[in-house]
Length: 601
Image (cartoon, rainbow, N blue to C red):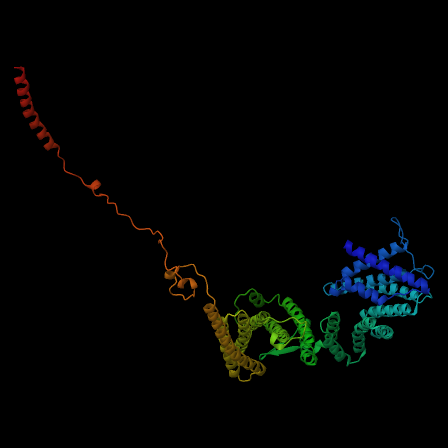
């Protein structure tokens, strides 16, 4: 933030110095009010609707300008407010002080307006800030009308003051007064647009386009019934920008006065009352959806309308969910518990809103698929446009299939069999498209077997989907049937080309292996089942086998151990050993005695 503040300070100081130099030469000051505030808004938060950030920037810029002009509002101990008069006006930067003071109050008021949806008392604070912004804008107009300012500055200050006053009366619902101020601001900006170059013309025309919806809304509240149609046309042409969100707010406020007529709704043979105001307003808005979509020319405008409907549907669901907090059956269904019997009217209405949300999401994604298909390589997209990959379409079809699969599980849906059959046929059709684009991604990687299998699966799903749709008595899927039939023809052609490419690739690989010899160090006896041309086989040093052969482990001669010997009990021979011992002792003694005795003699 510090670096950002330093850059802004340098820029503002340079701009102020340049303007002061120019004004000294021409003896008049110029304030490009609209260009100044638009640049500040785009760079400091309003591109994303962050009014708090923009308010902080305005405060810091006011402080920097006062410091550079030596125009303090007091000291540390005491505040001494000073007013900017014509005598004090000696620098063009003095004109920026009331301008950014008014912008700071206006940004604070818009921040409080967004917060007032949940805290209604903040609306009083918002009106106070808008009144303070009017005080600063009037001060700016008085300074701009002085003789020290040129004609452009006078017109810029008058237009800005008229716009701020119109915004105050618009929030106060003083329609006639607001219409007068807005008309004055619009007239001045149109004149300024005609007086400058194309860049500045676009800037002033943008401000005129912002004022036009407020004028038509004021006219509607005064009594002009055609103003609602004009607002719808503006919303269609706006696309996806800041003006579209403003138009959505105006349209929702307009339909609030018509919502009293939407008291009940009928879905799948059951009529239920609509008691919640937010749901009634959303259902009334849904009635105008078809006409708005038919009138929308660009794809971005149609997607923007679908986004707006989804946002309103989510808000209506939340409001109805808050009203169903006391419904025990609804609580059990939210927790995923099985329910028995007939659901309540408001619970059934919640299922209807969920059905609208899922269907709208599917239609929005189909529009995005249509946009991506235009950027496929075979459709010759515009130069510089991003090329669509098949994987991008696969992801969208996955979301579509998931949304459709949730429809039969809605609580309280009657005639489930017919609904399931319709949803099942649609799911099969979109699965065929998903398999088709998955096959294309495999084809780009030259995986021909997988590609053919996926094409065959897509073809089977196409046939099942068409058969399922034709079994329904009053089918409204004629457009889907035609698209699936076209897909069948594409798949047949792609399968034929896939087979041709696979044959060409295999023959090219065979020719390459035949013509380009490969050096393989394995001996011939180990690759007899492979044909690899090698020049060494025809030479005198052909490697036919390994010599000397590699050592191989062989079993050694077995060793036998007498394990039974340790478990055998032999008979005792002690008695026999004693008898032999005695007989041998007597005979020996007799011989010894004879020998030894004869010797003595």
